[in-house]
Length: 94
Image (cartoon, rainbow, N blue to C red):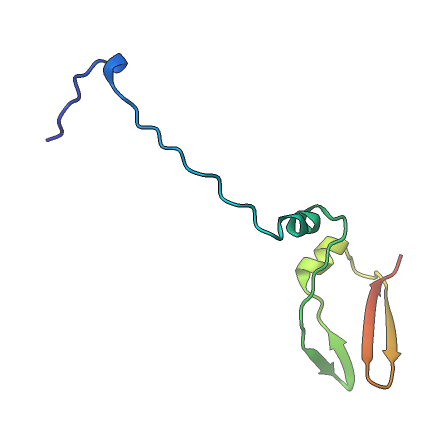
């Protein structure tokens, strides 16, 4: 059975604890800049598929949703080859 507290409210004492503020992380400004930046960077490594001799890439749904892609939209593909570098850049056509 629980004991009832019969002390009047004005006689009850509250325990107040004071804690020191935690130190701000050293990279706080950097994190803030990333959070409030207008640029958004998202990446994912995806597998290259093949169908009837043609290669294809499945774009992640979260990315196509953010770009608001719909059937028939265009994507520009740019191939950049240097001696020590290979890049394939996909851009949403405007």
